[in-house]
Every structure is written in C-alpha cells, then in structure tokens.
Length: 176
Image 1 (cartoon, rainbow, N blue to C red):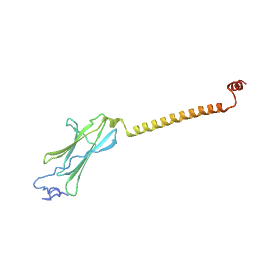
Image 2 (image 1 turned 135 degrees about the vertical axis):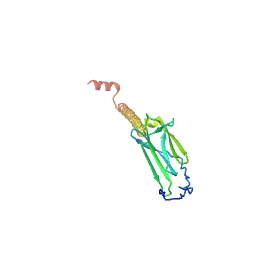
Image 3 (image 1 turned 45 degrees about the vertical axis):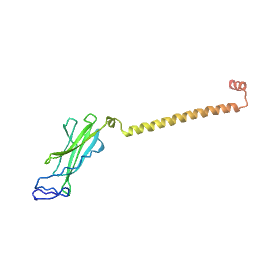
Image 4 (image 1 turned 60 degrees about the horizontal axis):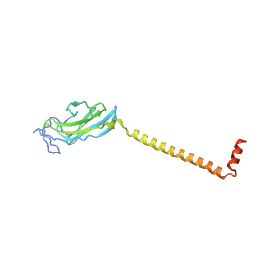
C-alpha cells in the first residue's frame, strides 16, 4: 500500500514509481444493473487497476455530469485503486448514461455506456408471471365448466333414452 512521503515505492502492476510520476490506466468500466431502488433502476460502475486514485463520474448523452447515488474508492494491497460509483436511473431521467473513469495525472480515461429500455420501467417480471398464471387458470376453468355442462346434458339424454316411457307417456307424467 502506498504511503505519502515514503519515497520510491513500486507497484506489482507495471512497477510504477511515485517519484517519476507514472501511473496506471485501469480496466474498462463494468456497468451491471443491480435492481430497483427508489422508483428507478440502480446501476453501478466498477473499474480496477488505477494509479493514482482515479476520478469517476456519470454523464448523460450531452456530456453533462450527473449526480451519483454513491461513490467508493478502495486502495488494494498492490497500491492500485478500484472505484465504484452508482446511479439510480428513473423513467423520467436519462435512460442512456456513460460512466467515465479518468486518471488525472495521465489525462486518460475509460468510458462505458449503458442504455435502459423503457420496457424495463413499465413491465416487472411479476406482472407478466401473474398474467400468465391467471390466463392459464381462466382457460382451465372454462374447459372444466364446458366439460361439466356437456357431461350433465349427456347424462340427462342417456337417462331419457333409457327410460321405458314413450314421449307421450313422459308428457302425461309431467302434467300430473
């Protein structure tokens, strides 16, 4: 781990020296979707292997800086830094954002972009699942009702045919 004022310290990745001002440009930002939060979708930007401490920020399509929900920087045992910056994207906000991680000394940056579809905000998986389940139940109930009605009519028909009465005798019995 780097300590201020400790002179020349080398890092495993690239044998960087604090004295000569060299640095490391880390990994391309990875942007996984972490789920729903505060009425929006939480996405996190992570990048590893930076030296010195990087600057990370979210930007919209026009390049304007967006406020982040959280920002953490950790220095690993190798002396390299990793950064994690989160944002909550709402349906009303920008649904296409970029994460920029920059080495301030080398003036180099890595950028990744994510776009959240409108569908992600309007359809939740449980709504779709509930619709499918209710649809199946409705179809089963219709089939069951049709079968019961058919079997009841058939039973009446068989009972009527199996009786020893003629139609005239049957009408005569009903009138009594």
